[in-house]
Image 1 (cartoon, helix red, strand yellow):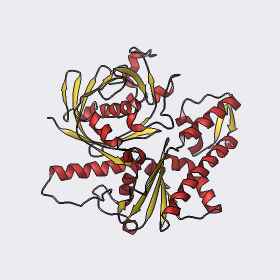
Image 2 (tube, one colour):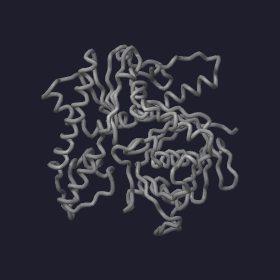
Image 3 (cartoon, one colour):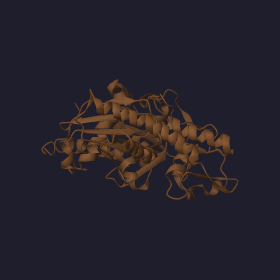
Image 4 (cartoon, one colour):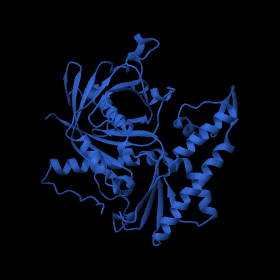
Length: 392
């Protein structure tokens, strides 16, 4: 068996976040795919290799874990430009969607083909054999339903292949992926780990470690509320809900189309409009800067009310909670609305991460900490190290 490389991958509903090796490489890919043909037309094909591979991901994916095998896809930025682009739908299970696996395999292949990894993985002409030790996660609801075991087992013990077709720099390369080990963590547990521990699982927020905490992770399709008590995640009290920001983003996208005739490519475009630093909640209509505040405020404030109701219901059942942290990409979108609601209603002790990247990358960072600790302990059995916080 060749060398194995650490990968921590959060396949979020908005985008995939991946951390590889010794944190020397990060990937952020929009979670959008589109079926395509093998020879996609490219203007200036002779200049293809001068472009960024991430802007032109065009792959054929083979895996026994896929329901639809050997399909050709545009992935990420390239897919957002397609008329047949697909994003994950509300109510779907992340662990059961081909789209989750296509994104996961593609991210690993993009890491494996980098020149920096030429000495890590064996390469026979245009075929790279890559072994990974993977840390990833699923929504709390899916873990409580036992779907993590099936998700893990369909990945272990098989070879999964990604073939780069008309992709800048990597055209014609194939990556055979194998997993030496896979750890699937519940997302609420991962958020807690990231809050209180550094990369070596040393406690960094000692004032939080013994507090009773809620962590409300708002994603694209779901919301997890983890209940932390006595340094553990209380799986019986923790709850997952089929409520995320994706439906609201689609509603905003549709209302902008109907009212202004402006077609936004994907939910990512909507997020850019409502989170950008300058000209927030404005779009260009026939060359004129136009406010869409009325649309975004109404729809997002309505979603914030639903999220606040979830918080209130869980807090009532855990009345000795001391603080609730809002994390995830959805909390970045809803932060101002939730703060306004809280100030005018119950006045709970809530907090957000002012660093938006930290909030969005929280899961990937947590998976990295956990899988790195697993590798350390299995490579150095004599080193007792720090015992990580356990999920009950």
